[in-house]
Length: 152
Length: 201
Image (cartoon, rainbow over all chains, first blue to last red):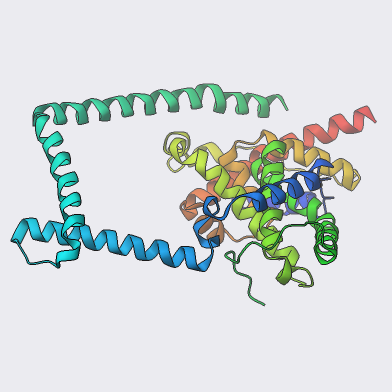
């Protein structure tokens, strides 16, 4: 198609596609919306989106997160540099340090070679599945839509 | 009035007088806009089932903003924008993984859009709006998604090439190529359908 044809086709389609009537929404849509609203309203606050939690709950949650993050950081610093900490946080730091210790012990049990092999196998499998998916998409979906278009 | 998408959920319709009134107002509001919202979602997604899900979500969000939307003259525009964005997000969620493979040829396959055929002087001009609507919707559904989406955004949502490129996260060249290809595919399909329709009637 040359430039002139492009413009002509655009003009033709703009004319043909303008002023089309709206499609009628299914009768069930209103009922579905009202049912969904009732369902969401019946959810307890803690199962809703965080932005819709009560202000007190949101504030409390943020404070707890900050305290936990602070404790993790403090326990790391204590282990690393032996820094002095307040007495009341010692038990919490102990628990955090133990959890960290168990996790690093578990990781140290796995030989590094196994980890590298697992990463390579994982990447290969992902690529293979990705390729298979793309092949299926092209052969099953795209060809089907192109055939439908030609038939129309 | 500026509408934000993050306002708290209002109390849902229950038994009290004001709530029942609010529910009735919202139902009237929904009835006024549901065809427009559904049509927008159906044209973007090309699927009636997905359009219903999207229309439902649009009105659930509208309910959360109902205090601002109820008497707002821009409510239609807000609903249309939300419907379009939700439909695009919905498609993108499933498309992202396949896009690289399904659309990778488009950029270097410009010649595929250079199809030569005779362009008619008129198109669907003899048909009623209802007949045109049915034919166009059927033809749009058959277009591949990566062609239908930019075409719908350009011709029905009045977005510019640049806006479409930004919304879909694809290059301007690809937007133009896809729209050109979509038109090249749509035009003969519309002509054939119109000819069939005329013959049958």
